Structure formats: structure tokens, C-alpha cells
Length: 99
Image 1 (cartoon, helix red, strand yellow):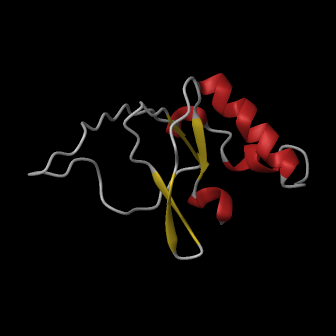
Image 2 (tube, one colour):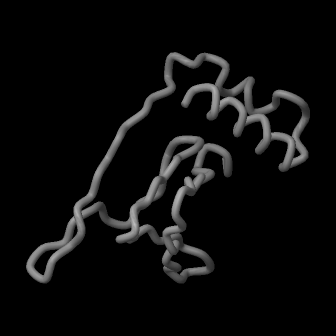
């Protein structure tokens, strides 16, 4: 996952037209990298599962959905469902990149 993160960081850097290794200089100390596996069970009629509306404070988030789905993104004030696609990983570019 670390190698994948570094590769995506480089690709994002290039796609944004930034100077070479611009993003790397802000994340060169890999000691702060972390990985968390979160699993949310499907909601039922009596309880909701998952997490509330939030922003990811890190750089890159990998989301692997099952066929139940539930992931949404906010765009222009509207919540848009991210339809699960088999064998795919959603890559979310988070707040640190925006800053």
C-alpha cells in the first residue's frame, strides 16, 4: 500500500501540473503514514451503520466497496452516490491536496 500511495502521489503531482516532487516534499517523512481498515455493515430498518458526513483530513483514501455500496461524494452541494463497480478501488483525493 505504501508503494501504491507513493505512485499515486506522483501521478497526482503530475496531473495537477505541479513541479516535480512538489507533493513528495510535504510527505517525505513516511513515519506519519497510516492505514486503517474500516468495515461497515449494511443498515437495517432499525439502525444506521457507517459514519456521518465528514471530510477526509489525509492525502489519499482508498475505498473498496462491496455490492451494497453506501459511499457518497458531495459535489456542488449535492450528495451523489458512488455506484460500486466490481474489482475497483475508489481513490479519494482529500483535504491536504486541496490545501
